[in-house]
Length: 358
Image (cartoon, rainbow, N blue to C red; front, side, top):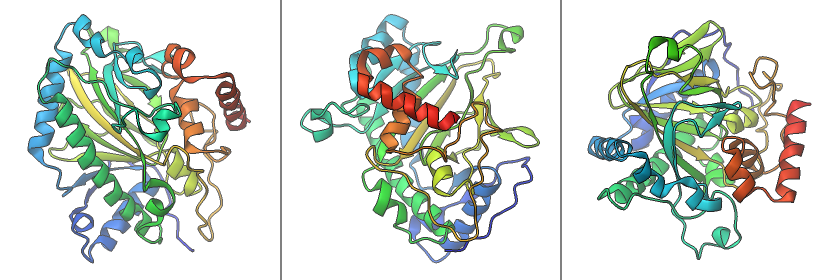
């Protein structure tokens, strides 16, 4: 399968793609796929409009989230992550989440696909699978979050069909191999304002990083603060009404040999008010082994020398579960020690790190 690369000379803005033809599955979806290809090659980020996600649902989610975060810490800790165990669900306070070992200036709630105790993966004690924790004192919070995740999962399938077309593949390529039963991870983050301009100099809502999986679909409020790394510097991903920001993750970078780049990004909330964001991660199945797609005429384009962590996604071997655990468990070291790592999984994590660094 032959595909021509797009030369990446740096970008100064993030493209906007109207995906309505993908949603309605009309012939124009091939034009949309071409636009997605250019965006993925040039910057790894793009806005989507024409997505069909109900604005009332988005507004309800934002309103209920603000109600939750407006509570005192004691109330929020009633659904703290320690109570979620291996499922890796629940609330964490400001400073508890780390990026590259440094505390992030945000609080948040972790969610995932709602799985009951009878589910085989839950029965087996598989990390990152289980039931969610919801605040009992905020009516309709649970129903709204679950409805939103269902709608976004469908949107993820639609976008992956477009990404498959953009690579000259069958529309079902990713669903057939990786995402028929995707690993769904959803976060609601609340970034407090800085107490003074000087307080913001070396503190980040979230520091420079890439996402781990295939595709992230981000809803953000109107505060701004998201920045994407270009060869020409940091580019603001400013809010656009009723749009989502999409970016590809490490596994799609790996699958495409670096043709589609998992681009570093960061957040700094300088708005002077609380900032809400809602990243939805549409990832490969936990047990799927992620392999490179054979694209004629392309060699691996490895950017590990430019990455802040010096790691290569192309050196990785194993399942997506191995990869995501090796990454996520560093975000909450205490939870990793308490709930996730056995001696075997710790050895596996160390082996993955050694391969990536070497």
